Image (cartoon, rainbow, N blue to C red; front, side, top):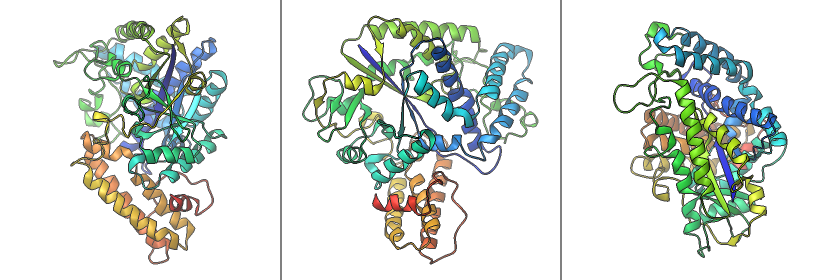
Length: 486
């Protein structure tokens, strides 16, 4: 059986001009807790000659933040502050503190965000990775009025990073529709991942739940829901085990304010010393027990995969599960890759290779997402509908004004804010009640910025403060031109 493992690495644009902001802390924590350990694990396997033919999607906001001249140089100071805080941990936290010390020191030496692109590129050449990207600002493409712009600008960001265009593309939230299929075909996207029901409900119904080819020539790999949920599910997935490190209980919740400087009082530290335990009072984390459980779970998962029928099975996860949400995730994944390298039943391969070896039924994927119920409900419901309508109204205003622009730099600022306004992250945060107030505030700020810059672009008003946003490499007017073309 061919096994396609896809990791989608993405953060919304959280670059902040202010040091030690909560947004910047989010970026730095994802780097030292997730991306740096994942890279180190894959590099170690490749150095041992163990193939790592994964498919990895790197979102444009993440790529742009990795080379940001303001946030990236602050990473070293952020990690050094966390090391200082960790060294203040009491003797009862010794085991967890020692594990954090080793992780933070490794990130300080070899985990800089600025080196990430080169390291991923090297793994593509030596380890056999397939690298993708996604829509420019992770827009929910079925609801976007500028699908072509989202895809074109996302590709341009990838080209700046790696020098080539990716063959495959990740669909934000695995959201597909007939209009998105047309946009992918127009952008020469070869293949992507959808959720299982996009193929199960395809027209005409395919003979199996394997990959399909749309009439426009785009190949779709269906994410295997049961296989994914064995890892991802909150209720039944591996990360729920009591031996694993607890994600939610951060040192910020009990650390005295005077010991937190210079971290702001509302910021989480990323330092965690307890294990999942259960709903009762949390016990202290034992790193050795956590790793032993990850090894056992990796073996269990490999055996389960080997018992599955079919010719091609696709797994797809947010990369941040491995390390950020699930501390032991990179170790679990490393053990799984090592175990499958010797399997006679399962062969790990890149998405494009699996498709080249497969006979694809021709069918149109059903409109769907990987959201609850397979619909767009998490992003379009009574909680988020007002945000969606507001964003659409702003886009209509922008679309009317940009063709009249006389200042290409101001037009690009309007386009930048409008693109960021389409990010799927804000509605998801509101729907899940995760920093919902911050998400609503950010949407309002972007809407105001987009409208004010569009007026300035026509020479009808003064320029507002600059939009802190990505995509500043092209000639003035390029972003606005992409948005105008849609």
